[in-house]
Image (cartoon, rainbow, N blue to C red; front, side, top):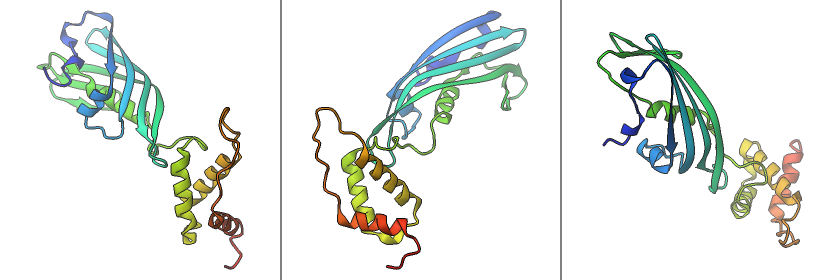
Length: 204
């Protein structure tokens, strides 16, 4: 059996009316797709096929979550997925595809929907994978803060401004219940950088 044979949709043998199919997507599915962005997955796909005359209307709904890597702190980032995709399919002389209609040759007895599902999930994931402010790994964020503090020439870099905002948010966030109330020491160079960035017209 092929890697994606379970996703073969038997169009020619489907009765008229509504048919439903379910698929579970895990880490192996995306590994087989050679998708390096998704490191783990727990997704359920419900595919509803409505067959009327010579037209098949496919409606898929994918829910669950995928595990990505945060671009900022490199920790795991669990991202929720709840997305849909609809397309009509019919038989024709030659293969053709638009945004709303897929034409497949009469010689094809089935349609493999694995790539449709994969692309539907991929399009639901933002290009930039980052935790919400204050949710990044604190140790890694501290290293980034220290690294940036030694490079004042990068004051206009958008990443620097974003890191400054995140560090401020983390410094003012309430303590975790049961955790230490002591704040980690702040590198004095970081304070100098924040003063410098808040007074862009000042001379060094």
